[in-house]
Picture 1: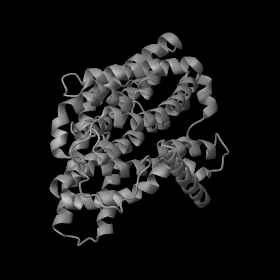
Picture 2 (picture 1 turned 180 degrees about the horizontal axis):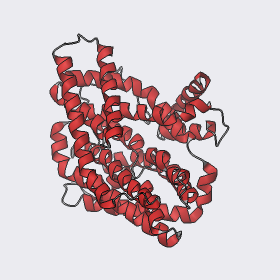
Picture 3 (picture 1 turned 90 degrees about the vertical axis):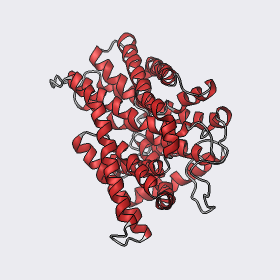
Picture 4 (picture 1 turned 90 degrees about the horizontal axis):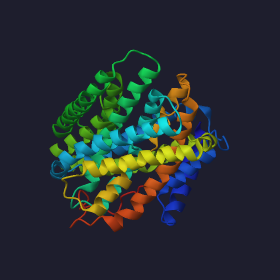
Amino acid sequence: MIQSIALILALGLMANRLFRRLGVPGLLGMILIGILLGPFGLNLLDRAILDNSADIRMLALVVILLRAGLGLNKETLNRVGRVAITMSAIPCLMEGTLAALAAHFILGLPPVEAGLLGFILAAVSPAVVVPSMLRLKERGLGMDKGIPVLILAGASVDDVFAITLFTAFLGMALQSGQSVVWLVAQIPLQVVGGVALGALVGYTLYRLYALHILNLARMEQLALILIAALAVVFIGQKTHIAGLLAVMTLGFVVLEKDGEIAERLERDLDKIWFFAQILLFVLIGAEVNVSIAWQAGALGLLVLGIGLIGRLGGVMVALLGSNLERKERLFCAVAYSPKATVQAAIGGIPLAMGVESGALILAIAVLAIMVTAPLGALGIDLLAPRLLSHAPEPAMRKARSAERVPVSGE
């Protein structure tokens, strides 16, 4: 396993650097390295690291979501609040519905299995979107209207809708007797529960930091917030509330209570993220079975494309009444398109549970990762300077020191 980690870090680092020099997001190179090293490529990775891939990827996600929370400005968040709520639901619902209809009429899947596929595809990838939005914040791009914050806030809830509706259709496929109405009704409870849990834990951390109750050194403070973030994810999994949203809320509360501590913690998390991102994107690539994606063929691409049209329409509907210009709305649609983590995590569940079209569902889920993760990341990097305006001064990073470690794509 140590050899595999060394291989991942060494080749991932080189690919990240090479792709950035070529003007392409570094995560693309890391995903390709993952495909090359993974069980569907040269099969050079230890089975132990692959078996624990989901947990390692979750750890990396926690790091980047903490960074996002510690950089959420209250004033900007208030400005985009209403639109962030619509962005968290409408694009997901429209994409999932349109993709499900396409799967039913084009691929001939039964309605329930088409719904399974639709809401696997409907989830946006925080692993791709969150780092990209943090880079835009640091550069001040779109921050005059809070666009990166809007997308960060919406994307953190988007997956709650997608996974809940996927669970509902899976229950119907397996005839588990779960009420779809009850499952959908739980979505607001999951969101509110995640925010409440994150706020409680974040305030508790602030008190521990501010009152010096434990007399923590700087690295001990960092360790404590990481432990707290992992704890809220665990609680979220056990209680079925939005654990990843709780992580962002935790960071946001610490920032609001003590900006100096938050800035210091975020700077330290930057350095951890430099290594965590390599593990995250290489292991996402290792999940990709190119041969299965190939089986989905042109019809699979057509279903994926129709779903993305639904997401584009959903973003435009969600942004009605906002102060965003047309070009900025187009950017939001592109930024909301990448898929990776959720599809890698749940794409194989229908097949494992014995759903008849499970192999086809998995093939299209893998195809979605291969197409949208690189194109979405590339689209964000290329279009942001062209479609977004610079804030008067880069928000949240006014005094960023030169010692900062770069993240992928910079």
